[in-house]
Length: 520
Image (tube, rainbow, N blue to C red; front, side):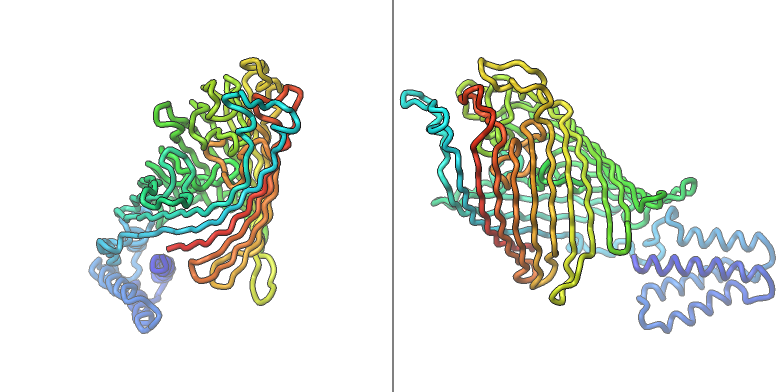
């Protein structure tokens, strides 16, 4: 790209030289170009390929027979030839300057991966089942007492390894393997037990990416705008094409489908405009229909000042065929807080079974992100990043009727459809010795988001509010430590066996994590 910039500057210089040559009794184009070459060839900072390209330019102009300025025809010929050599919409500059097929077979491969060891402690407080409602019975086959959760500590590992291959013509193909249960949409951790011989691995990614304007943005003369476009097909990271927070889409949830993102620069008032569209499927349960979603998003970028950048995104997630299945990634009661299906069920192990959620999920998502250069302290720069995300489910709760004799749907439609989060980072880890600190506040109502793809850092993904705080430290290059604490309280009692007058939950959770991360 640096070479291309140099050559484009030289092209502009050639046009100026040509104008001067045709304007009067001044050096010819051949002489001017040769003089430029004689000066630049002694510049030790220039790449030899650039010097070779300039030499070829001199020979080409001479072979074309371009002489001194004798009229408009000569000027037009020179301009046309320069356009052929340098314009972005002409043949690839690599064909002119010796870069075509410069990558060997092994240079086209990129291997990457990461390894994480985690120690996690959960402390639960939900004595309501025995003390508050006195519901449990020793004779029940499925008692509330059985659902009381004990405090738990565990070791977990995550290992991911992948590759990306440069096919050529700005097209790339890649794949990644990850630990974790194959049937879940977002769980990549392997809990440590006594058996290390049966680790489950999942084909986490398998995709093709095409970026036709990767090196030279497409230019629209009529509008005066430049544009780039990226296409993705296969199983890939949702956040390659869309901006998202874990409240709506967790980074471990890799959808299968198609996505496109286009970025336009040069628009009035803003630095860039992006719009993206995608169609995905995600596995809920092997024997049932998969959930699928249409996603659209519009993003504006603005450099407010030399120290402050702003990004505003507005998107929609239109989910279809979402079932209350045995995938704890979509509805597990101790994980997700209890979205309710049309049989009154709030978790996959309910003996009565369940089919579809009472709520559809058509989620509007609005994100504001501010990045400030921050302040200097202890000989380090501490950037500040603030993110605010608001989600609104326009199809929360299809009906107001009770189901199966319980109060599962007794709340009015639309009452539980809001979610928002605030996230603050101070500092950034890039090199050894760097620190970063975080605080976040979350408020997620029962039908606001679809838990199949949302975060699993908190013990719930909906129907809770909570706080999180943590710190990161770069121990060595690509080796970093992180510690975080999560506090969450469930808002509305979600279980079928609770009395209909009980609307407030006593369930709380405190989760502590310590991670060792190695990237390669």
